[in-house]
Each structure stands twice: as C-alpha cells, then as structure tokens.
Image (cartoon, rainbow, N blue to C red; front, side, top):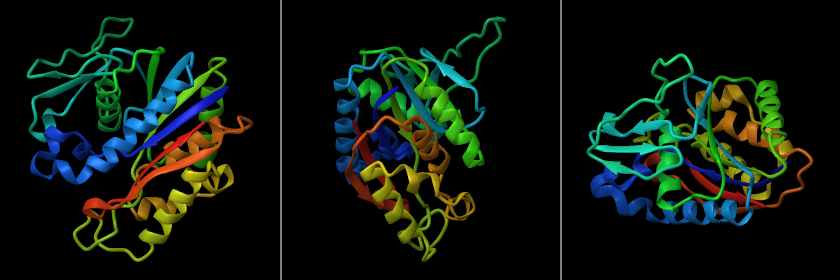
Length: 247
C-alpha cells in the first residue's frame, strides 16, 4: 500500500551544475524537494518507486546510470547511489548481458535529488512513463505499484505547463495558468478525482509533461487515505513547477 509520496518537477535546471549562473533562481524549489523527500524517508517504506516521463517505458532497476552530459555538464548519477563528476557512464546490464538503457532525464534528476539527500532507507526502482499514456493505463500502473509491498513510497517527477510566458518553451497560452493552478490544488490536497480528471489533450497542448506521472500517483493512492501538502508552486522560465508531499 502507498504510505507516502513526493511530487517534484524534473527540469535539468534543478541541478545547479546544469543551471550555471541561474542556479539561485531555483533554490526555493530545490529546498522544497528536499523537504518532500524527507517525508518519504520518515514513512520508512519497504520500497521506493520513482516515476517520471521518459522513454523507453520499462522499469529501471536500482543502480541504473544517468548523465547530464547532454546538457554540457560532466555530471553522472546512478539511481540509488552517489553523484559522480567527470567519470564515464557505464550502462547497466540486463540478464542477457546486453547494455540496458540509461535513465531518462526525469529519473536522472530524481537520482540527483536522492543522492543529495543521502537516501538509503529502502530499495529503489525507476519507471519511465510515456507522456502519451492514457488515463486508464496510468491508473492501472499506479494500482500495481501500490500493491508491490506492504509499505510503498512514490517519488513522482513531472512538470506542469511550459506555456506561462512569451519566453516559455511553448510560448504564452492563456490556458496554462489555470491549468497549473488546478494541478497545484490537486497535488497539494491529494485530490485523486481531480488528478484522474486531468485532460490529456490539454496537457499535451500545454506541454505539461507530468500529467501521466500524476495519474499514476492517483492510481497508487486509491484507498490509501493520504493527505497532501503543497510545498512550492512557481513558474520560473515560464514553466510550471509544483512540489508536494503526501503522507
């Protein structure tokens, strides 16, 4: 059963080395993410599942590497272990001995957050969720995750709209602010009905990459009776970011 969840944004800019001179503008969001992960640790789960947008959609076992080298930074991460600087990425291996996929960016950001908070309280698994995954599949995936162990925690990565200003990646869309406000209310109050009701088509038009991940959370939380708390809501660089904790 799900006993706790943390919701965090997943822009590479959350990592100071990637953000460079703009790092301080996201300090409040980083602090909120640290607080949210503290709620996960306090719940003492038997299993932590990290969910975020990304392809391929299959699971990523503990120890899977990721990298921010595509963003011009010699920074590598591993799901469940420390961050390393300037080292070669060695991809994980599957049973057949072939190299496995590296972490998608959202899960690499999650790995960085976990290493920053010295997470070592439970086994970790990652799950990439296609942004196009339909609602019913998202909810079913969440239910399966919630049944994985007696005490399951979720770290849910995802951004809201990318259309809050004219300089945003998706330019200005007047529907973006109301959409993000609704997401913030739903995540801050653990409103499962509101999360289930998120419009996938509108989310796609607003470039809200977190919609599928949030609906996975809604499926996992069914029957858990968790309460939510909004820790941060903002739109630096025209992209909506929400941090929340459920316990």
